[in-house]
Length: 422
Image 1 (cartoon, rainbow, N blue to C red):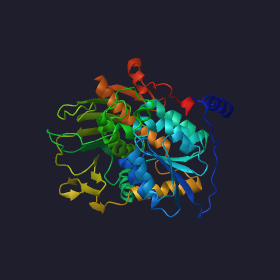
Image 2 (image 1 turned 90 degrees about the vertical axis):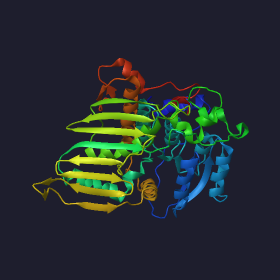
Image 3 (image 1 turned 180 degrees about the horizontal axis):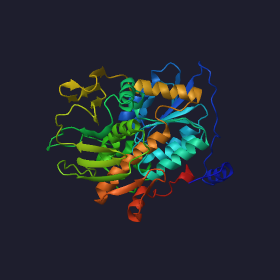
Image 4 (image 1 turned 180 degrees about the vertical axis):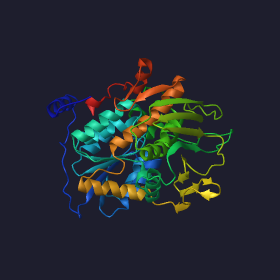
């Protein structure tokens, strides 16, 4: 949805919500940044720790709907932050210059848009969105309010990832015609979900659900395991696919694929989850085929998250580093063998965001990039669930010639939640 500033003010006033008009921070090197965090669970606590370690961060606000997580976030801030149950109250705080959003995926869009309208810069965890159409609205709002928005795709700030991409783009392994990416592990057929004792008195289930469909409180659906349910996430495709396919798309310097096909389901892990435990998706890019593989029940032998296959060699890439394996012709290597150890990711990504808050520069994982990479993941899930391939127009952000498939690009929010009411 698009709003001019007058319309926005009228709609927010009608909803009983105030907004702080976007402001630009001075770029002084000694500026301190008042930071708030929304969502202090597993990932949130890790991010909060990384931000609190930065010398120019002042923790001023913490928000969570689960009381033990809220208490932990406040404890980590050493008594310097105020606690909130409702993220909208946190965004009203004029001491908050920037906000970290580490809530489940189904909240990312609404909270990011609300933060941008409130004049806050945003570090929002990946995947940026729950469904494709959210992303374009988020980008438009970030641009309209001149906000710095960093997607939590920390691999983009890793020095060895950047070096690997320089080699791929620079032709070191020749012309890349095939890329394999994936996430595999072995939880075993006897896998049981984590023990998640949730005291209903400590959790505001209604607020946790927010825009998602109304269901009875189920401890397995929240905390860590939310990612196995379509109402809140997209499985390993949007969990690690948002990382690794982001790097692939970046390396190929493409806005998105031209066609997608996929297969999979929840075949071996019988824990009540919905998203695939095995999934194979194929993406067609100009002159390059990309595959994504997920396995929850067999780790396999490859030690690389991403393999770039070129006409002169192969580059294997993971968070632990990369390696170039040359092809040969009559015993002569076609390119130089190289190997590089892994580099810092999270701290570098956090630092990049804070520096951009001060300078107003574009961050390493700008919201536009987060949107396009999340879209790639969503398309993989759409074709897997549809059971047929689709053609994709990345510029128009539409599935070509398939009205039924295009309906999967957006979802309805449960009332009263909407972009007009945050």
